Length: 234
Image 1 (tube, rainbow, N blue to C red):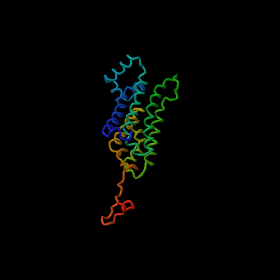
Image 2: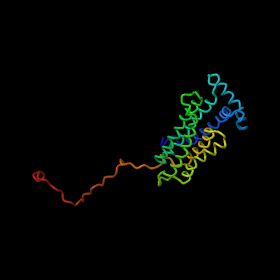
Image 3: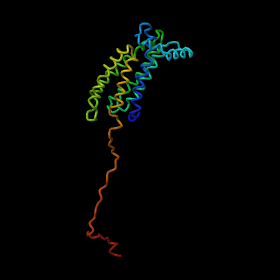
């Protein structure tokens, strides 16, 4: 994940992650809050596309919309991880850990929603994605502090990493639901990182296998030729 995806593709993936979480938000909030959902989300939830999706879910035997629209948010975690791969790798070991923590959010989110019924085998996992997101936000502060100096990491990037947790909190409050609302803000931040941050593949690498020129030995033309005993007998 050091050189791929390309910068343009990474930016697109990060924005798709944010838009996917935003797309899932209206039916998810409706499934969770019902008439208490914010009015603008209820208006969006009335769009024909969501009725078509719910009808399709009914047709395949899935009637738990809270589970369906909730677990699908795991896709955004995967897209953000993929989009930020080269940028996080450029931050050293701590950046790579941040990438793996982001990816960890995907299975945690899926397991959380799968276990939301009270009789689920691991009901205690319900809501665990909140802790995964907090861990990402806290570790991003660590990365901002310990990322190696002298690697061309700009100050704005360290500041943006340190602001990851506040960005998550603000986007959650603005959109009234987590993890979907949280992932919208995190996805936009990932898009900025993907577009502007240094990438690991861009750093020059030195190799011990690089051939070095062998100095030549010049023999003066007027140096007397050495003869052996065999030459003397010829």
